[in-house]
Length: 164
Image (tube, rainbow, N blue to C red; front, side):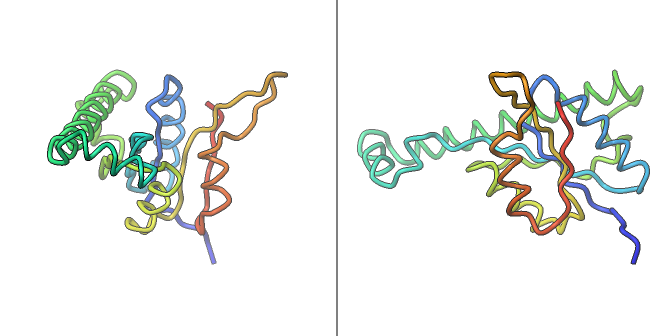
């Protein structure tokens, strides 16, 4: 049975080396004629991770204000991501927009990155997940970042890591 890729989930942290990883993603998409879905996860505020802290925050902050703030933050990140992709498409790919790069969708989620990335891969039934790994130890050796490590350990689909 031949391995085929038709749907790629590219997870990005919007870091400075993201375009380098994205070039690799585009190359794979072109080779397999695959659709690219890009996901970025906005980490939930630390005070929301703990149930007691979340309840305390809601006592002092109107829950509707908190909800509106979270929604507007996600919308801002998604708009920023779309602008970056469009600019990237014009400058790097010499294209009118990012659609020339096989981009089928841009998704912004809130939560813990490994969990949300894996859930998005399941939702899209992605054939693989591609992300960058860019952590270095004190002695200069590259190590896999915590998000990349968790995804490679928990994923049921192929994961491609590119040094960034």
